[in-house]
Image 1 (cartoon, rainbow, N blue to C red):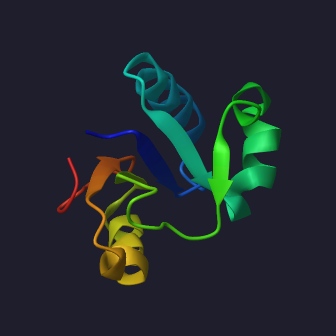
Image 2 (image 1 turned 30 degrees about the vertical axis):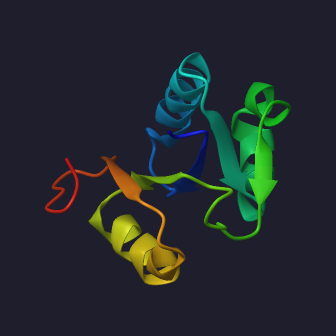
Image 3 (image 1 turned 180 degrees about the horizontal axis):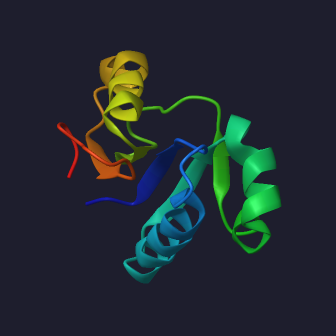
Length: 105
């Protein structure tokens, strides 16, 4: 069962704000706690201030505390997430915000 989903963001994608807002709402609707990296706090405060109050922040994903990593970006974003966190052994799901998307749909 997925209880907490960590959002890995490519903040340079124009559609990121709307997609992240909608994805966080869907998580809550399905009783999944949206969680973000601490380094994204300033961006979230500026872009989605209504979201910040109800989410938690982590420095690094910890197995057992994070059940899923949602990767928002393109293929490069997914490759960076995999390179950084594949050793955590937490499933990752990619959401393509790019144009082509060989790895992500």
